Length: 500
Image (cartoon, rainbow, N blue to C red; front, side):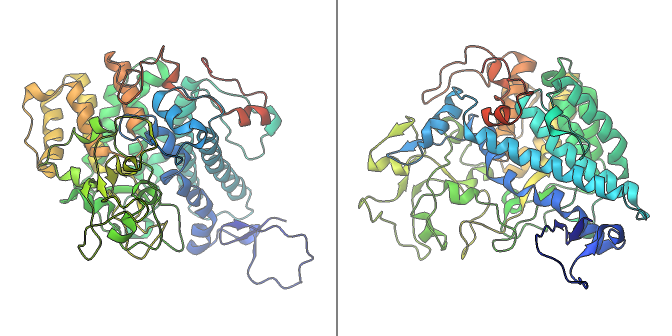
């Protein structure tokens, strides 16, 4: 008999004593709110790697807003970071396998929970609502898998024979997701203190908006009207508003944000996984922010992206450059080199052994570094927020010709950032994509955005050349990543994507 203990599967080779007090037989589980919360917990714990690891790294380090240069002997890692930046990646890049594994784990956990739930002899009264929540979470993971890899397995039954799993056409996965979300999102609860960190109805609408917004990429046919409507379902609900201070959405204690719709709760001790600042900050930033360990000196903003912010833009404060200081205000000097710790916003090459190159690149403090922590911080990871809904609807409405609505939404974002409002002449797709970059930087959407804008307009936002060292892609096969070779070895029925 399967046993569940606070959401975890218990497996033991030892003989159990007759009286078991910390395990509840499956047939008696899911009967109280606490049991239900514990039973669905695994589908949420599977989220934690998405914040900083494979999914985030693949989607950001391949875009124009994050670069991981090789600093002497640091950050070469078999050339994978340079390959991501230059779009010369192959199916052997382990970041792709990490992302595939993390997303597949989320899907598998959702299917396992659904299998247990719907096999109960006595089902909870709100079984339909619980099923809907777990299914929408499964759709969340499946959306990323389809977005990143194109034709992917579509497994919705925990009892599926793994040896028979094949890839399904991307457009068919898209159709499944749309239909599944339309059926289940209305059954989700709305925002409440009791469901913080859970997928709610308006989180479901955000996921629908993402799908519709990218319909042209996934199916060849745009669906701007439904994208606008889905985003408007969030905006018009009145449940969310723009946080007056942009960076408060990402503060160490950001549970009070009135803008965040769906988050991954993190805690530096108990729920680890938010390590973005550890990956980005310079080694010496330990003394600026009183961290318990030395940051990794890796993720940086490229020069062109950093300089797209004006000095008046409040969002520019998500990056740090220039002379760095200790928490007591003393200028920092690097002990290993004797050089002043002066972070330059300019990265002019992908690799340089010079000591000074350790300080190249603007570094992120979007998720405010937490004193007394390392490498994990307690800032909850923001997955969906209202600012994104504004910009998604603005983009869709531009395509629909509703420029007045689009301008109003974009200017609300720009007012919050403290930069001048646009006129109708400023409302171009070039400008809107740049504005999305400034607003959504390092939140994991840039690759998705660049490809969508390129497909819709023909401008080579994703495949084009950029500095340093990226030439124009020879074709558009890089719109999707390769299916990892390790996955094909494990399941030869998976078919590799064209061009790899």
